[in-house]
Structure formats: structure tokens, C-alpha cells
Image (cartoon, rainbow, N blue to C red):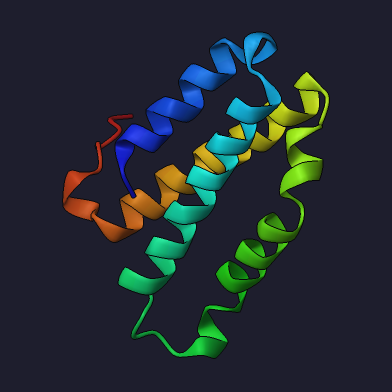
Length: 104
């Protein structure tokens, strides 16, 4: 996953009330493309029965793009927050050597 997408999501969250429906749609489609890319490139050799979760997520997002885009700001922000967490998690799993270590 590109860290630029996480940055794009964070930027969109800070200017959420100024985002047009078109800009929201472009961002959701970008997230969807990243999920599809991750599915193909990282999980391509993983048995299909172990990838049901991402396949369902891709199908769900694909079929509800217009509903997501038309959400109220608070709801749309929640969706973006969850996608941000997911993208960060997938990035860390896919490239553990690049993940930042938290010192407690």
C-alpha cells in the first residue's frame, strides 16, 4: 500500500466539509483500487478461501460507492478513518521492515 494514500485520506479528513461529491468519489475509487492491487499483488498466491474478507470488502465498497459518497460528513469521516487504519495495517503486514516501531 502506498503511504501516499494514507496521506490523501488524512488530508481529506482535514478538509472534509469542503470536499465535493466528485472528490469524495475519486478518493473512494482510489482506496478501492489500492485494495484490488493489494489483493492481486500481495495476496495473489494465497488460497482464495483465506482471502474471502478482502474479496467481500472489495465487492461491498464497489457496490456502495454512491452511498458512501453521499454520507453525511461525520459518517464519511468514520469510513475514512477505518480505511486509514486498514491501509496502515496492510502496509505494515506487507512491508514489516518499513513499519515504525513503537517504543513503550
